[in-house]
Image 1 (spheres, one colour):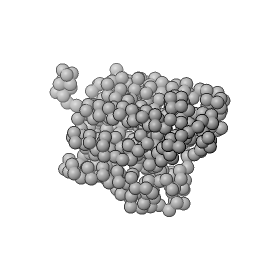
Image 2 (tube, one colour):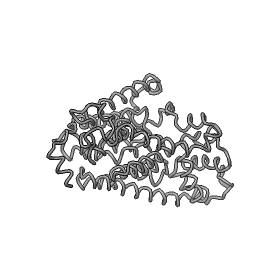
Image 3 (cartoon, rainbow, N blue to C red):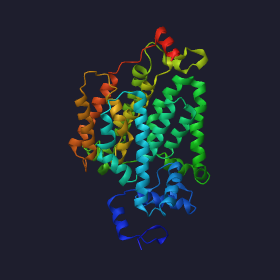
Length: 395
């Protein structure tokens, strides 16, 4: 009998070897959802072999389905097939975004789907919950591009319920909603997102509401220095310092505010005019096109990655599929295609260096800085002319 296996199931030696060589958190995920299946709804009491349950309720429901689908989590190979399907769905959703925007040359698609060992590992071998959250997120972005904002917000909230990292897109999404609808018509969509979180978490909120929020949405969670990808060159006491964390948070918020005021907002518009009701403003003055919509969302997430307190290896999937778009959207027109590909390669190398080193962490920050600088140099969207307005209406 496998020690600690659910229900005392017998696991063949080959399957146990596959488990040891591939999955990392899958066993912990299965232990956590098994606790819920057995009737434990106090989040404080739900634990796996890697620690307590720290993901929102949507994670529990999705991985409970996977628990039953994979013979109580024992059929690792089947679970890897399922995650391979998730990977293909994610690629289709990402490619549709790129096709709609036509911002990236076709050869870059090779790098998105074939050139990252780490991404393939995160999806198909390691079975993390991060890919599930990102798959739902890219589905939501496709809905936004189709003009289905309410359904998109619902799917976005579902993605947040799988893993909290999706909140990095929230500042950009809020800006887009205000541009599209104004303040009063944005509030129902924000309410929908909140209601979905409450409904999903209701069984746990009824038992221990403080325990649920403190575990599932723990913004002050401490990360282990040995797993950091981006801050290896710092002394460990600095890495763990709350003052360092506050400095990063301040830099994150400041950068977001600067991008909102100087890059996302159209020149000539007051930030307060975005809050006006749709009927009280000129529609074309505030709405952004598809290219700008995607850029705002991807940039919002990227800024969060740049100032993250720590990045673990599975976090690469949080922004991997957005990197080509960001690089080819920068304001440096003369940045050679080869240099852009080189930056992608250096980022990939940094994430594939295990354990991380001072040089791999520093090179990752240099690449992040170059991309952020290029995005800052991207010109502010101009107010559409009357001629362009008439042309848009005809189409």
